[in-house]
Length: 163
Image 1: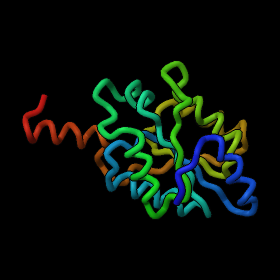
Image 2: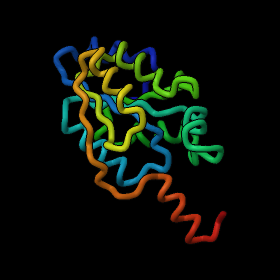
Image 3: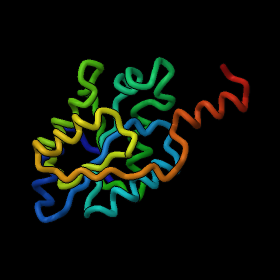
Image 4: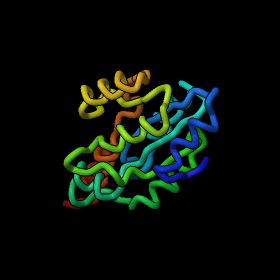
């Protein structure tokens, strides 16, 4: 397991030409069982799992002013420590004007074989078109764990009367 820079993505493909590379992306704030099950599902689809983690600014733009709960360095280290994850990196390139721009660059540099998303991923058409453009197989996994990070935060707020 290794945290890498965006620029190092090309070297992964060069180093592992004969391996099936699986790629996924997300915020992964407050890592929980759902994330672990997702990563295990991703890893089962290939030889190497590479994970893109949204930077703090992007997560704030997508999830709201009080997010992320854990900053990008903590989230990167947490994801890097998980058994199914071979490589991970921060996407500090995407922003509110193009929340998925980092995916384009990651596909271009990494040249993954498989891209995995959850069934409730936003902007599905964009992701499908990106996979067609780069000839990457798109796999949509069902959400196995019933709670999202936002659900967990809301449950904590309710249980402890936070507003």
